[in-house]
Length: 289
Length: 212
Ligand SMILES: Cc1cc2nc3c(=O)[nH]c(=O)nc-3n(C[C@H](O)[C@H](O)[C@H](O)COP(=O)(O)OP(=O)(O)OC[C@H]3O[C@@H](n4cnc5c(N)ncnc54)[C@H](O)[C@@H]3O)c2cc1C
Ligand code: FES
Ligand code: FES
Image 1 (tube, rainbow over the protein chains, first blue to last red):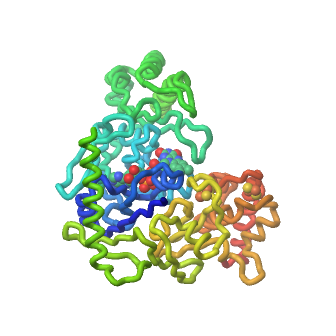
Image 2: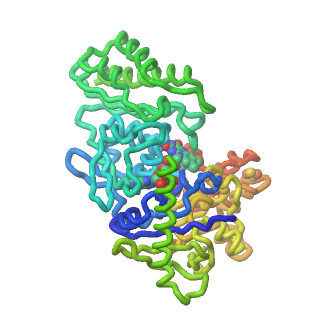
């Protein structure tokens, strides 16, 4: 027997909350549908009732909150790429968005969908990790703020309760003099899922590293921060020797698996190489100045 | 474990029945096929489509068309199966190949992964809109002139992706063309022809011949 699911189409956040509170666990949120509809078409989705949030404009838009930008969960990659605020203050997110799918995916795929889909290969996630973003989570019970780096509890698991949705991401702006970085390694430029993906931020104090944050995807069950390697680098003078140490350390710090896209060994070495690329860019940038 | 399952089963049936009763209360006496119903959840009114077929209105190539579909039906299925508008092709059905590309609200999308009910209220443009009588649209003519297709299966979607691209980038460089069309696959390998066609159509546009 073929299922004939229902679709609810709320127009406001309060309607979403009400629907989720009433039907917790039985409703599947659908945003741009670029992950969900693929599963549905492949008959890999059991949900029988959908909550289509696409028309809820309260969930769209980018606003300047002083030291951070607030990005609505329904903001698409096309909107992120074109937004002057994102270009200026979170350049790595523009770079990440440009690598996601192709135009048709960028026109429908949303930041919130990438976050909640919780794939370790989600390309915006290392940026949110490196930038120490926070997520605004809402339900009829109220809203709460969760640090992005505490949002995932395991492979494709999050702290989100059945009656909650992600409303927005709050991402601190890149600071004056801070360098940011994004690099994705995939099979081809368009539509490729990452073999490894890294975003990082660093602030230099003359020749030494005042602060550094490194987010990496596709190398562990969830997106991760390379905290050991960060600790090695902070306060140290950036020399070729240090870069070599960091390369080796990060290759050991990540815990990738071998899957159909790539091998564990490849992912470890490339993670080291990608970090090397960022650190060399910093040195070259300093020399150029 | 079984407790948890019981609970969720209970929740499931309890909840759907409650919403369903409320919903059917409103739609009593209405024929099986209806538009959306407004149900009341926790004091908030929310539109509910289904589980029966629902009547929706789509604006396709400038004309309003009403069609009855299950709420889970995609825009692609609604056009191909219900309205016999078969230009856009279903190939991968996984948002990957681009054969189903349509322009919805000015943006190229994979219609195989957009719900038909979601596309209501926005202009939907398909390849069928391009010809003017017997005259090919300049972009179609450019495909012909540059061998932009072989078997032609990817072509209707590819043409629409090109159209959306040109609408946004009227005078692109060859590099921009290559980057901008990454969302469409062609098993016959007509990419060079397609890129040349887009550049030709852009030139004609600049020459003022194109009013598409
Ligand atoms: C061909 C193709 C290429 C792709 N390429 C890439 C790529 O290069 N990089 C990449 O990272 N991803 C890629 N993706 C995956 C996908 O496009 C992204 O993950 C996208 O951001 C998902 O957003 P969406 O709005 O379409 O999510 P949906 O499919 O609507 O939803 C995804 C999941 O998140 C839940 N959800 C959505 N929004 C919310 C919310 N606000 N609150 C709570 N739950 C929510 C849904 O219930 C669902 O479980 C690709 C997909 C396809 C089909
Ligand atoms: S059929 Fe929709 S992208 Fe392939
Ligand atoms: S012409 Fe045959 S698939 Fe493109």
